[in-house]
Image 1 (cartoon, helix red, strand yellow):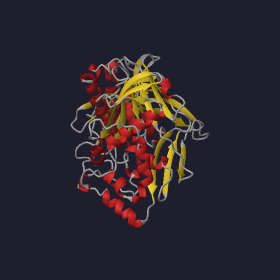
Image 2 (cartoon, rainbow, N blue to C red; image 1 turned 60 degrees about the vertical axis):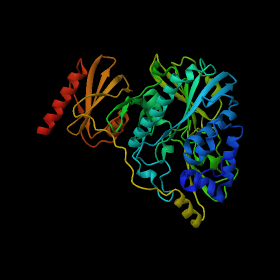
Image 3 (tube, helix red, strand yellow; image 1 turned 30 degrees about the horizontal axis):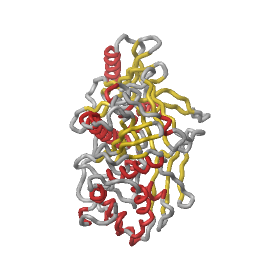
Image 4 (cartoon, one colour; image 1 turned 45 degrees about the horizontal axis):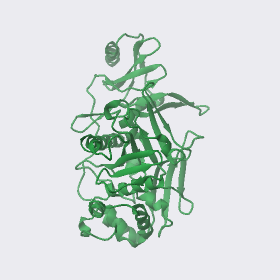
Length: 461
């Protein structure tokens, strides 16, 4: 299987493929991709054509195959589907590779200018919302395919089913880490902390959860696929947002031009991650660096977690009884990476032409909440749980249940926030007033009306 022999005209080739295949400076990177493909069987004689035209899904499939080889999984290509029929040290399993791609009319992932700092302009909240929606779509489509087809195949039924998922849904997708995926699978947003302004000591407050997102059409996408039995056919998600061309450059023996790599790695001894900026031979990265495996506690055919222990892999679990989420990542785990290529200026101009964007693209926007209505956001801070949030007259109201006294209370600050994490962060930095009610109530409906009345009264004064 020759990945780089042109099968179609260059004008119909994917921009990423054109860059990799047509430049003499990427020979070492092409060698890495050929190594990934060693032993891979093109069962329908379409793979190379798809690699050259759509690229990302085929690139991801090659990366997943290389990871399975690294994990000592044997792949049986005698079956047409699913993508991977595997034998592991713990038994048989099947897996499907899928990517989250950009919505129609939106900017593709390759639409970025390497000469500009565009990352600093990204609205992370909007980026993660779009990523969550697209990841959810990819997971549900593969789950449905399993229900309709794979579950009926003799070689696939009653075996752990793994969805191998990668995000390619927008430019700079690689900075999302696992944040969007954890929302989709576990409703988990992020832990809540406050740092002591004097000592710098970090104090744990609780967790921010996210229940859903809304598409531009207004239809909701509910999260928490692995918090109940709705997807008990899916044993786990194999995920990486670092399976990129940066990965290929990083693990190649050398580069034919200067490349500056940057990365953030988990620091088990400090609250801040390791920040790395280096060129070869001082920069190192492995094939499995940045891989996440997210387990479904409701799986009918569970996947053995020990298959991924003592690797450069983060393992995610959810515990239904306590409704708690946990991730176990090794010290030094790759959170995020990227690179800046420094080829000669003439070569850089040539590369930019190969990826030149055309036309204007739609921009994802968050859907406004109905004024004055409570929305369940979940999460907790100390004894306060079952959080709800509402917007009213320019204020954000948080209504929470006191698990000790078994009653409802509320607080509010000026501004518009959509998650508990955003609210807590804004509250810690606020210059304005924090509104509190002077009594507690038996229902959340009473609380929101009392807080709205207080805000109205402030407006009159």
